[in-house]
Length: 178
Ligand SMILES: Cc1cc2nc3c(=O)[nH]c(=O)nc-3n(C[C@H](O)[C@H](O)[C@H](O)COP(=O)(O)OP(=O)(O)OC[C@H]3O[C@@H](n4cnc5c(N)ncnc54)[C@H](O)[C@@H]3O)c2cc1C
Image (cartoon, rainbow, N blue to C red):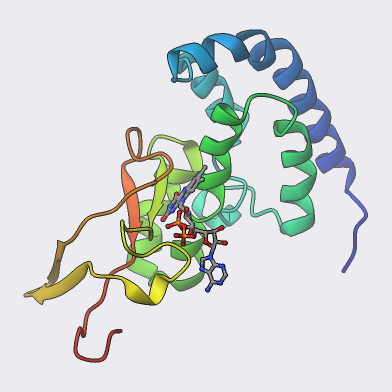
């Protein structure tokens, strides 16, 4: 693995460092107190491309590899977790499932708007009785025509109040537990 950062990535890292220090960190205590990130900070994050880190360039993102994302998150991690986690969940579990396993129709439908941050992503695995033991999922997905009907209960879903796209873990064949 090549750990060297390109000139472009170093420049982006510096931009993010300044943004975090000058525009996010001064609001950290307000974010903590009010339990929400001001829309102008999210908008500025969108304009910096911070919602498209994992999404391939073909779908409007930056398509960074693990080293690139780690370099950017080194800077994002210097401020309050309530802000950083929005981007962490979106760029991680909230979008990489569609990048890696989505079909072309799903990628075209979701990724461009996720890359701009217009649509924020979330990932719903955990249930009251299924945390570490994810094999105990009770949520079901039953096919009806060209759709799946979901039934179940999810907890601890980061970004749930602000997300538009949810990757939901569910059992399609309860008899097999799969
Ligand atoms: C900040 C935050 C964000 C999160 N975001 C998401 C999200 O976006 N989407 C989502 O689906 N979930 C999310 N989660 C949930 C997280 O994935 C679960 O909390 C985690 O899987 C643990 O499940 P649990 O809380 O039910 O704890 P449990 O599974 O009940 O575990 C409790 C304790 O028992 C230990 N333990 C469990 N099983 C064993 C074992 N077999 N042997 C030894 N020790 C064991 C664990 O290590 C832990 O210390 C989030 C959690 C946090 C804290």
